[in-house]
Amino acid sequence: MSLKTMTALACAATALTACASGGRTGGVDEPIRALMSADVMMFVSFDADGDLTATTAEIDAGLGREFTRADANHDGSLQPIEFQNWSNAVLGGSQLGPYRLDFDRNVDNVITREEFDAEIRARVADYDADENGSLTRSEYIRLIGQARPPRVPNVQMTPRAGGT
Image 1 (cartoon, one colour):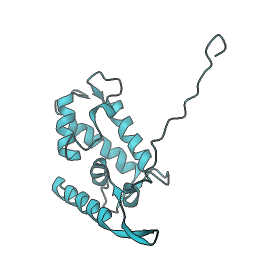
Image 2: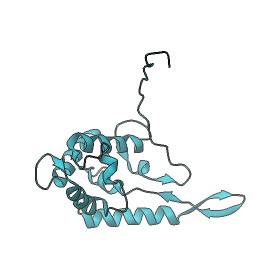
Image 3: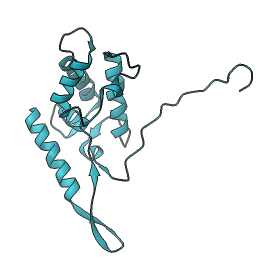
Image 4: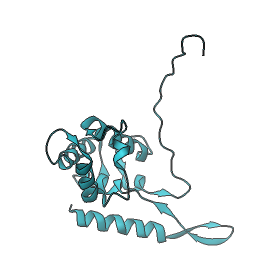
């Protein structure tokens, strides 16, 4: 699927969900307002067999393809300009997110394969409402006011020495 096709698909889906009328509040018809993030275009491209579901295997393969695409100089990490170019090509621009610092959590201006995979997998988990490891089209759309909060890893806190 070409970038042009994915962009058109994403725009059409956004327009349809944003303009659809539906829910009633106080007896007055109000439009349904929905959000769709730019990373959805990438996740849609992971659906290799066209069955409208990105499976765990397709997501894994897609991660590898996208990191390879982004790593223009093939040194195993992404410099800021490489990330910017990738973001423009795959996500439709740097103003839409995810942003470079979402990936570069230690802010060393280098995004490793591990950092890239961790951010994409966290985004997959955030979309995966039924937690089955696959992403369906309905999981990409979030009604405004109903967006799920980001998942926080379950981290065990160890007490400090001295009692607190």
